[in-house]
Length: 54
Image (tube, rainbow, N blue to C red; front, side, top):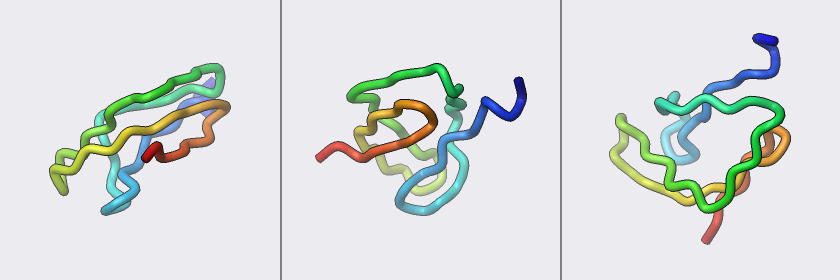
């Protein structure tokens, strides 16, 4: 089961955020905040594939 869980990475600075995702999760319009670079972006997640919303 551990292979189905991943940390979400910041798309700006490539560091780990405080959010984990699983293979069976589906997220829409999630405001992902990075504590390192202090940026926030909207993302969608489906089957461990992250897409940035504009």
